[in-house]
Length: 116
Image 1 (cartoon, rainbow, N blue to C red):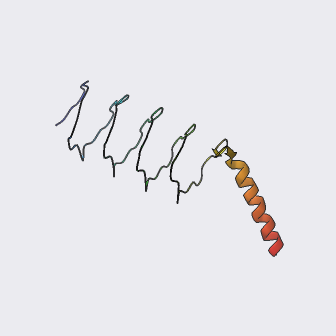
Image 2: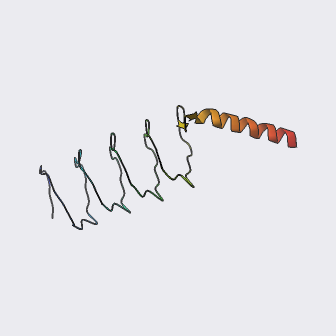
Image 3: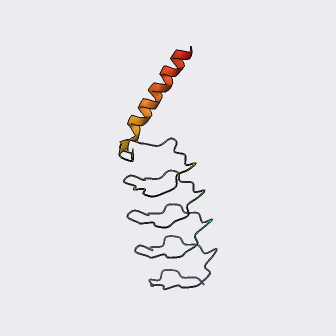
């Protein structure tokens, strides 16, 4: 089925839309419940103001993203890696991450100096 240049509200239940392609589509305000989006590719997507609950995001890769103001609560971050990222103002359990990293690097330097 091809929908082009139309404005409709869809109420889709118990359906298989796997392999569908969406380009230049406004789905703002949409509600997705019990939806399988695994294996999808999302490029140039605006998710600002969205709320995600009860998710399986294992194996995700996020790059070139603006996550300013992101709030993470009650999540499993085991094995998570953050690289090449701006961390100013980021906190973990209320502790400034920049301060933590600065202290860690100072400790590493002093350890290296004491073993030389």
